[in-house]
Length: 118
Image 1 (cartoon, one colour):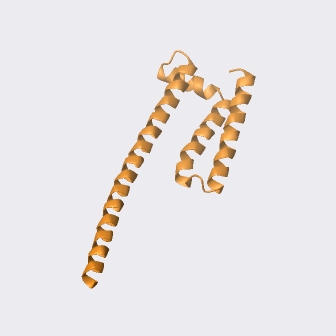
Image 2: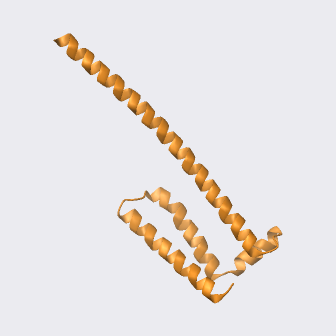
Image 3: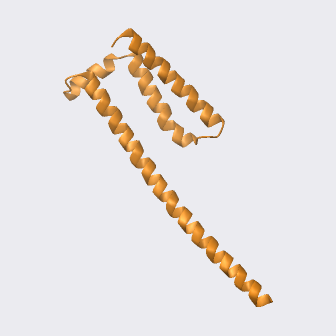
């Protein structure tokens, strides 16, 4: 890996980390959600400082080139993150539906009580 690419990866990982810390501080992102991105930036930082890790792991798993291993690794990580995000959105949609239904029932009960009192 060239020195310029290593420096670019290092600076990118540091910039991502700083951006994440600002987002957490401003309460734009939950700490639980930011942990994934912090770990990902740490992995990028580690790979930029010690690129031999990618070479060693790609050789151990039988990849022809380390870049193939890195692409597959990051695609897998992002697919898992996408699945977990989709699952969380589905759970939140269900909660919103239940809360909306409960609110409608409460409003109906309130109106029925008002009509009985009149």
